[in-house]
Image 1 (cartoon, rainbow, N blue to C red):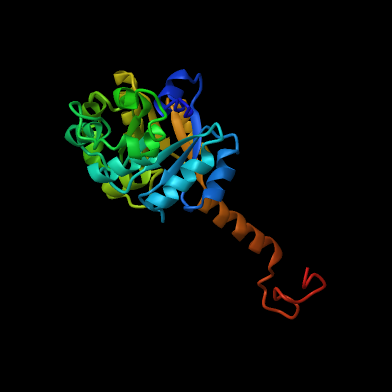
Image 2: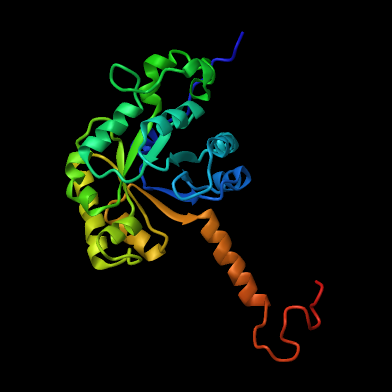
Length: 276
C-alpha cells in the first residue's frame, strides 16, 4: 500500500498560530546545502528567491527537498507574477508563494486565480504527475489544494502603496510583504530604504494590513530598522541573506588577517604565520 501523506502547515497557518512575529532570512545562493544549513538555524522561515538569484526549477526543487526535514517554513519568490511560472512552482511542491511587484488589486486577483484550480482559478491540473500532491499520495489533493497554499504579495512601488487597501481586500491574498529597496527606487530615493519617506510608506502599509486583519511583513537587514518595524506591528521580517552574510564574514576575515600597509613583511604571504 502506498504511503498516505499530509502536507505541512502553510506560512499563513504559521502566522495565524504564532504569538510573536516570524523571523526569517533570504536563501539566494541557489545551493541546497546552504538552504539546509539555514533551515536548521532556528529561524522561522526562509525565502528561496527566484527573482534576483540564480535559481532554476531544478535548484528550487532541490532546496525544497533539503529543507523539508526542518521546522523552518520555505517561501519561494518567482521572478514575476506570471501564471505559467506559478503553475510550475506549485507542481514542484511550493506551498508558500511571495509574488513580487504586485501593484494593483487586479494583479493580486490574477495571482489568486493562478494558485487555484478551476472554476475558482486557472491552475493547470497535473497533480498526479507532480510533487505538489506527492504523486497522489496526499488524499483529496485536488479538492483541498487551495488550503495547502499560502499567497503573499509584495508591495514595492508607489502605485502598490496607493492601492494597498484594495490589494488587501482581495480574497485569497493571505499577507503582504513590503520591499523597501524597490519602494525607495520607485519614490526616486534609490538606495535610501531608510529614508523617512520610505519608512512612512512602509508603516502606512502595515496600518492598512492591520485594519484589514491581514499580516504584513517587511525586509530589514539593519537590526535597528527591523526592531522599528517589529514595534510597528510587522508580523514577519527578513533580517539577513546567505550571500550577504558570507560576503561580510569573508571580508571581516580578510580585514582581520591580511595586512595592507605595503611595507616589508606586510603582504599576506610573509611573516611567521605564512603557510598556516
